[in-house]
Image (tube, rainbow, N blue to C red; front, side, top):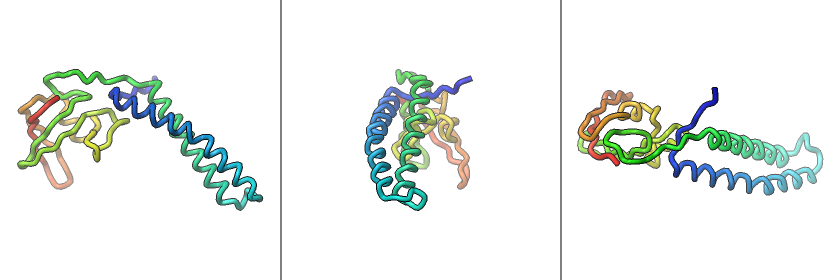
Length: 151
């Protein structure tokens, strides 16, 4: 059974842009490999090894992104009165507010405010409504958030 990846329309666009950029680097990497071959003995050629390693990393990422895009299930970000994938949620705890967008694991980037529905916070807030509380267990103890805003 193939795995499906839940992504937002914005996440899909970002992945499509990334794969095009990576494909554009193929020619540059091929030139590096050809240039490194001209240095002679490949068994002791650090430039050649580095270029081949870079090529492997780029090709692996291209394959990974293409697999995600082929098996993507686009999250509909329509308004609802409970937290679901694609929701933008503002949480409050101890007088501090934090806003997250709930996304699938492929798009998760906590530093830019995108948390996975599989993360500890994501699991707890899924299905909650404005005014509901969610308790998350952290290494420092339990923290209770109140959902104050939902888009």
